[in-house]
Image 1: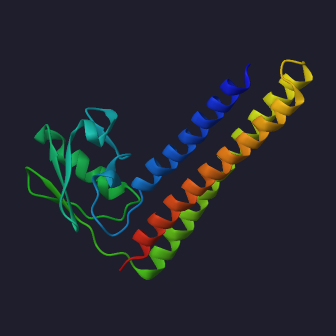
Image 2 (image 1 turned 90 degrees about the horizontal axis):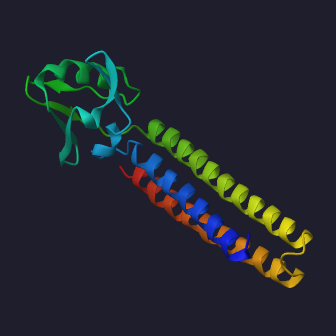
Length: 186
């Protein structure tokens, strides 16, 4: 496999690791209402576990409240039960047409717990990025050993994978810092 393809594949995988981290961070409660808080919520409706976003629209009319408007009013009770069973710690209010979810401010202890979880998630993303670098370097070494690329090209390619790693680890750090700041805001 040519060096350009190895580097391109490594960059794609590193971008994917960062994208997964961003997606996971969107589901972390920060004290502000965000429809992403309930993105991964599964509701037992019609005898099947269904993602909430397939059962209704979710909006945040203000920073302290989520509103869920079910497509079928018959599922409103199921949605309410799923929210109460979830680990989000939220209490939904059902008026028969809509479900309103007040988002209470986070306690200092909960903010610290979330900050620790954010740190773990960021470290998992960094490890994933480093694993991609390791795999790319192994491919480069194999290509060099087979005589498909010269030694100086292999060295240059390894330098490029190191630069990619630094770039994406910096992205993870930037995303982590922004989310931690958001969680720690009072």
